[in-house]
Amino acid sequence: MAKELRREIGTFTALATVMGTVIGGGVFFKTASVVAANHSANMTLAAWILGGLLTICAGLTSAELAAAIPRTGGAMRYLEYAYGKPVGFLMGWAQMLVYYPANIAALSIIFGVQFVALFHLAAAWQLPVAVLCGLSITGLNFLGAKVGGTVQSIALIFKLIPIIVIVIFGLFAPAQTTIQLWPITTGDHIGWGSAFSSSLLATMFAYDGWINIGNIAGEMKHPERDLPRAIVLGLALITVVYTLINLVFLKTLPIDLIAGNQNAAADASMKLFGQFGGKLVTIGILVSVYGAINGYTLTGMRVPFAMAEEDSLPFSKYFRRLSPRTYVPYFAGSVQFGIALIMMFMGNFDVLTDMLVFVMWVFNCLIFLAVFKLRHQNPELNRPYKVPGYPVIPLIALVGGIFILVTTLVTETGLAVTGLALTAIGLPIYFWHQKRLN
Image 1 (cartoon, rainbow, N blue to C red):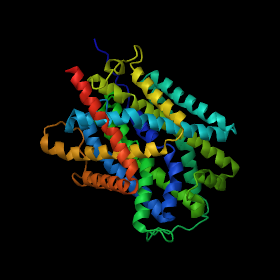
Image 2 (cartoon, helix red, strand yellow):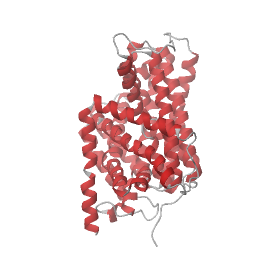
Image 3 (tube, rainbow, N blue to C red):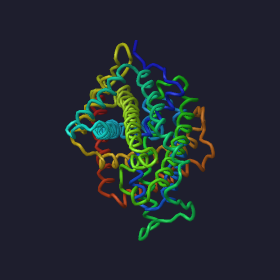
Image 4 (cartoon, helix red, strand yellow):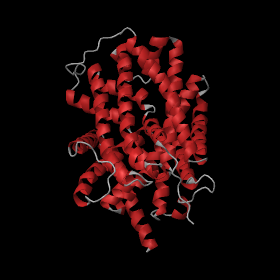
């Protein structure tokens, strides 16, 4: 009898996976990029709020497909259902080859850098710590989906403690700078349109990861109820957290000390708590990053497994193997960590990660279009959850996604074209493998 994935992931674990995957280093590191783009406190806050609202609309929209097609593989399965197997394969290919491993590698290196700084170790320890970090998380997830989910839940609780402390103390502490909420302006000699588009794009990296929860739908106890709830509630809480913590940074430090300064969170905390505050934030970042890596590891290894289930990949018989006791796709997880390990030794993943954010938003827009397509072509599809405010909410998500794609194509053409080309390589591999099967 064929082994199946166990349905043992509940509401809180699903919520923790959404929040744990999204809340990583972005809220700490991307503040510097947002402020550098506009040199304006009120535009910075507006960008974080709008980025959150756009992400919530995207989550509300994709949740309709997630609930209607609650199968392991997530968004890949939605696209396959709406557009056919080649499109679904392309998304799975991009996720498996670069998206998940690159995020695991980049976040592991961030963990190594912060760990070495916290304990005043030699810089040579950054890479070994990064490798041990990624390896330990992969090992924990090999113990079963329940163990990986438990790690996610624990990481979520502990990562929010320093953020909550900073927000509460920061909001009630005397303001060091004045913030004017209206009208929304930019710094001197900075164009309003370019400043706002660059600011919004920067926040998108911090909000990235919201759709990954769909990959574990096949292991959720009640996906039709828990999946939309986890996506919507998780993203709303994240938007509030991101906006409040940025408000604290902006009222604690002068704008020029935040722009381009990736240590702004530590600097603001030192202002609030003294020297101990900087260490507190570093520990919070470590926990946040560890939880984010766990979220990518937990969901990422399920993508090639889902593809191998239908023999879509070369060597599918290996990718669909489950461990005999914990029912975890251990071969897929090993390959994922192997690719991430190679990327860790490469050392620089910023361009690669930005490229995949662009590529993923191409697929996101296809998902938003699929909601309209299936409503029209397949009205009898069982939809335990329907996107509220249809068609306005999906249209907002689609327009926002197109804005992100067009802006990236204009400002970073080479990066965008490279990402599309790397993804398109999957097509000849797909048809070659299908020809072999036939």
